[in-house]
Length: 172
Picture (cartoon, rainbow, N blue to C red):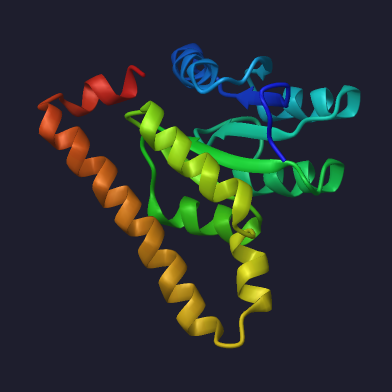
């Protein structure tokens, strides 16, 4: 269970993403952070420390995102795994959800959006576990995909309403 003293690893090659996510997490009451600019460095951090949650940028790194998630699961099965993306694509989201990611943060990062994703990630099983446990896997798959697509559409609509350009989004 997450608490203000939970140890959180934030992984991104983009300092602006790390800063934005970290500031919101601080406002939500979390205090203990470690950062890594690449997946391989994050894996080394897992060899040295125990983490309660990892927030990882799905942008290109030194290994595939789904391989990173698999490695994190091998070190800390109970670690909450949340993908972070400035420019998400459906295939990446579905691959990571299927691979054991608990949720996704999609830019623009807001306190309300982060709180919602974290609450969902803390309480819901991973996508792959929900599928495994489901009696009707097709219905479960549809519900989970629709839920995440709806969240993505909401995020894009909020972004569109601000009137900012796509270039502003990647600067986060």
